Image (cartoon, rainbow, N blue to C red; front, side):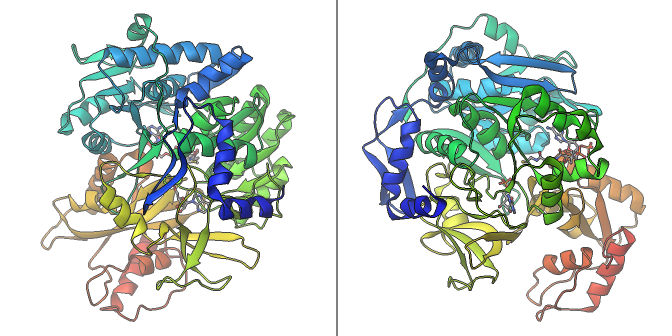
Length: 630
Ligand code: COA
Ligand code: AMP
């Protein structure tokens, strides 16, 4: 069946479409209703159905004879180690870890926060939660103790699971002290912490509260899978919102399993037994969906890569992993390819490797510039697929679905809406715009299975953030256009979210950190274009009157403050001290205009600007730190 036929079927009869897809999953009890639309704008999939996500990702494959197949390959150039875990071994580890959690009093519905580097134990911990119906919340290791504390207070976990340390290319990340500091800062105190002691740096355990992973696992009583409601939460994943307060995206069990299993076949065109590699981090949605759940639900082998595209040790690292582990499909962010291209523009490293089984490359997480897409196509000689999605949806909204029917590629576009998603481009009044005209991108409700159910403990914020702009539609937060052929072009965000190396960050959060400095009167953070990372944050800071400080020292304090409050992943390094910020007459800071200046782009003078002369001052201040060049 071709793309258009399948897409039309998904629109005409979503219940029939997704009921058929649900055949990819093993159910303990079938659902009473495929789509429960009795309480709009809240929609629930597979109501009344019961299943266990861990059973579907692990145990059923062992039962079906895949016990000896590698489930996880951990490839870690930063520790110079490689480990293979078969499905049978994974089942044993996950059952024992679920037993550890149970022995610590964790029950169905309890939360467990996981703060770990890219090690197989992170997956074991996630699946262990799913096995007993506990709700995990993985926090990316590049976030600071302060960000972790915010998540602890929101999710109120009974137990934390952490690594003693992480290893970045050139430094040890001290996870255990970060964890201790986060718990100190948080009002909620988890009862226990399970610490994976890594030999590179052992953590100091706090008696009575902390346990060593290996000791706990040695004594553990294996726990079996507990069937849960399809609509029960599987996990919470915090993502940047428009304020400093992150949003806890809640994902269910049933719809999630169905959507991901369907996507492996229809979008990524992968068969059980093949090796699938998402070079991301378990702390991001790409990691949740395509390092952990989707490849395992589909019976594939997943790669857990603890390294970078460059520098571990060189720009041939990705080609080595593909060759060595016979990867069929790679998924990463365009930034990774920009980094490789910058170091090895002629792809000399590739000559050392045979990518025999490699079939396709998928890119997402940020806008994919046509140069990078074309370089990857030329270099690899396989289809390169840009696809668009977000933490909230959990899987692709628009993609070239290789498992259905490859469509012609238009560089700059993630192709067309994936079956299940009714994507519309509307103007500020909610009217459809003409093909080619830019507007807000929305998705008509109901969204397909797998998308967020709500924000943790905050239905009102869920409705207010996503569903209130245009009743009956989900606001993606992205702006762009659709062409005559239905190809979607995602151009920018309509809020203060920026994408730094494919990592989603809120400039509002960084502004809150800067504003907490005693010398700062007001500030703005903009995402300035960057050749490698797509965007980089730049701070513009107005000092309180009378503050006479050494500028260098002050800037260092501000940079350290953001690193401390948000984390190194923000890559916040550039600050311009200015006398005033440009504003509208009603006092709104003109961030968009400053971004255009920083990027050296032409801009229209905003009609409501209070004092246009300020823009010249901003231009000079940005020039002084290397921006605003035409
Ligand atoms: N734990 C702790 N710190 C982390 C971290 C983690 N898991 N991940 C990144 N960091 C730190 C880095 O060490 C760096 O710190 P530094 O300022 O002390 O050097 C900072 O956060 C920024 O990290 P990163 O954005 O990774 O930049 P980099 O310069 O180390 O590497 C690239 C540049 C292009 C190689 C890297 O950004 C990359 O691989 N990007 C691919 C994007 C990706 O996978 N995105 C996921 C979404 S799909
Ligand atoms: P995240 O929630 O971290 O996955 O980030 C989601 C956001 O990243 C989206 O809302 C977009 O702004 C951006 N994004 C992701 N993929 C793409 C893509 N293929 N093209 C353009 N923007 C993208």
